[in-house]
Structure formats: C-alpha cells, structure tokens
Image (tube, rainbow, N blue to C red; front, side):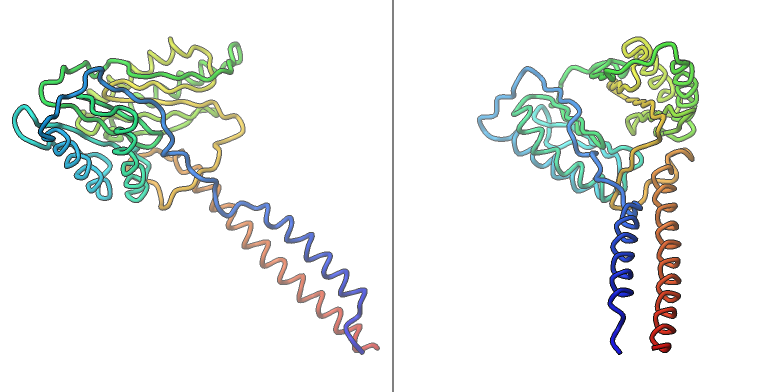
Length: 301
C-alpha cells in the first residue's frame, strides 16, 4: 500500500509552517551603512593647474591612500614636491575590518572629485571613514574646531535620559585614552562611540573627546541621538531602549579597540546561530519520530 495521503498532507503542512517560522531566526545581519555620506567640507578656492602638476600629485596621493587602506585604518602622506605638494590622510572607524576599511576608502577619491572638484583642500566624511587633503601652505585650523553636527529630532527630556547619557560620556572620555584613540560602550541603553585622528596622543584625544561631549550636551540637549565632528576627533551617541540594530561586516570587528559592549552585534548573531542549530536538531528528531509513526501505521495495514 502506498504512503498514506492524509499523513503526507499533514507532514507537508507541518514542514511549511515550521520553516516559515524557522527562517525568522536571523542568521545574518542587515547591510551596513558605513559608506553613506555624512558631510563634505570643500575650500572655496580652486588651484590653478595649467601644467597638470597638481592633478598628478592629487591622483598619486589618492592612489597611495587607497592602497594603504587595505593594511591600516589610518595613513598620512604627501605627494609632489615644493609648493605643488599635497598632503592627505584617511582614517577608518576603529571597528571596521581591513576589507571594510578598503571598501570605504576606495569610494572617497571619486566622491571628493565630484563633491569638491579641484579645490585646494577638501574633506569628505562617510559613516565609516573619511579622507582629507590640502595643498602646501593651506591655513591650519584648531583640532577642537567643530566641522559638523547632527542631532536627532526626537527629545526625551525629563525621563532621566540626560543623566544616563552623561554617565556614558564620562566613561567614553576616559575610554578613548585607554583604547588609544577609539572606544565604544553603553550605559543603560545609551550607546556612545568616540574616535580621534591617528596622529593624536592619548591625553590630547581625551581632551578632544571631552570638548566634543560638551558640544553635544549644548548643541543636542535632550535629543536621543547626535554626532559631533571636530577637526581631530568625533563622537556619536544613540539612545536605543530596544537594543542595537543589527549590522553586518565582511569580517569581525577589532577586539583591541572597543569595549565589551561593541560585541553586542556578534553576541546577537551567535545566539541566533545557536537557536537555529537547536531548532534544526529539534526538527530532525521530530521528523524521525514522525517517520517512525508512519512506518508503524504502514506495517499495521
């Protein structure tokens, strides 16, 4: 006698329902936004380049920076000679892998060209990296000068949020020194991140981040999120009572430059995999028991 039609239908229905629910367990995280544009800063003056010497120096500079981004998260160099030389640097966020850093930085030369053109200095900041260049003799600015800010539209005044945020900020100010320029942590659902330019020492980095924190407190007030970019450092904070949104990276984050809270995404992914594995084993056991029951019924016929 053939396989019982009713039992086969029940098995098929169970299979569909189970795997519909099983696929809801996140084994991978959503796509990262580290290459999205944050801001651009372009000098008002363009360089005169009748012989093409500046263009050649700039092209060589960009090529060197992109090449180094596969090996390091920070690199500074100069291209050209004398008054036609151009200095530049790139820096990636401290939790990006080398592959992600390269992917981020490799997008910047074209963006600089389209956003700034042939200006004597320019800076383009993405979520995960930035690139800066300037011709010889360009006027320098203070490392504490604010370049850009953004504050969330939602406010949570009167809920104890500012006290929690300021506690997280206090930990961040000390953490960037011990983390040698990069640190991320959280306190009661307030997630903070800070980073300084690679050439800044630990003590100066802490002072720069402290200045950025003070700007955030004044500029953003009770906003649930904010980003403050100074010339030599930046900070960001987010109030996420429901936890950190999942993000993906082509490889693991740097363990030497982040606090224990930076592993939140990895922990979530690990738990999801464990749950998926457990569910898979459970499903196999159920299938075996179900098949055993069908075989027993079949023998009875």
